[in-house]
Image (cartoon, rainbow, N blue to C red; front, side, top):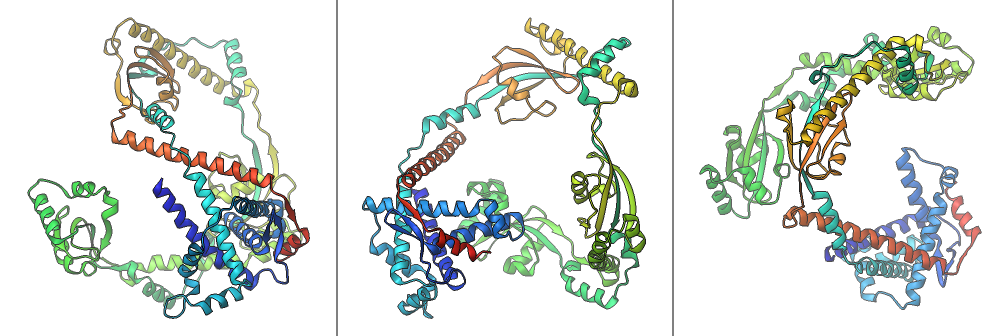
Length: 614
């Protein structure tokens, strides 16, 4: 809990800094005029700057998530201003409650935060009172206003911390969950397929086929089919005809020289020690066969990924370079100095030098440049093609007047070749209806396309006579699967009577102490769920995609509560649950405070802030 508290304090400091930076930006480019507050929560004014900044941040976050700058009307439609207003009102309601309770932080805390802010430091790096006042003045704040804001933030954090640190860890709950998740099962199972069973099927009667056909419509329903006419143009279609400049190719080769010219390298791992004596002793143990480099890494609580320094040149390794490059694969050398202290180095692989001449690289360079130019040429055609379509041109007209190629496709969601290999084409094809106007769209490789849907055939189940062969095959598959299950049930009955799997000619596998998180290859997703509902000695037959599985539960193993992994899981569950409970309590607490706080809002002031975003 202490660690969690320190983490929260750390984030409070970050929030303080970000708050000041945000307020500075607000005062410089945001709200202007005399609007200072948008209302009150109890006796606390709700600062206009606070609402502006909250709204600005939420719009920026939504824009980043959508990959574009959203407009303010879009933000309103998504409820962003309402959410931002609710947040700032809730914060000030909590500030008002803290004031009623007599809670506050001392001047010393505020002083420490002000002195720690780098925005208030002079050229010598120390706090500069003149710089402090000037910075606040530029942001439209007085010293009193800014320090009052800091005090409210710190007091609010103190209230939040009191809630979060007051929730005990639910150890009984955590131990119960850990016992459940780490409980094991030992069981024996064997698959049964058509190759293991002699199945002789009769000729299906008309009644058999009709019954199967009516019971399994999804097996025979055709997907929605769309007849699509389209035009498209990709860089591959034109890049062979695009001229390239050899001088530009040479310049490109020089710019990418590190890609074509590389010295010999080594893949290396580095383990740092406190002093050279400890490193030398570790190397001696490795050479004597008493330990290994991976064992030394594991003793530190590290993984090999933690000590991997990637591929390096001899020059990059300074004093260690010659020894590393003279070592055989798997050798450990050292100790040698490093930026972090004396270290041992293990050499894992040799990467040969690369020396690709301009002439050797020329085909790839020419292809890259031609493709890039082709993409630019295609991009230049977007507006002309858009104008043609907007003027009423048919797709065939576009193909005649441009380099785009005309094509047709019978498309379903299962078709993914040709132009349908592009995700953007499939998305537009699925969303377009008959009669919709064709629009220019972009392909993933820089190409263009436009399409029109000429006909849509809805999903349907064809008449039995039209798919008789498919229905017969489906009936045979269903009958075969049932015969396998019947045979599995017969053998399972013999297992229940005391026979063993081998005596029944079953190729059995025993799994030991598998937990609910385990996985057994060759079994359906629900297999382990079924196993964990069985009692020791139970034998069951489970379906397995046209076959069957016979499984017998041999033993139930309780979780080992003395295992360190068990203790770690209990601690993790207890911590996350405690935090979740605390968060719920805090939200209920703040909601109750807000409901019981007299809130008055100035809609004109709120509208004035909104006008800055329009």
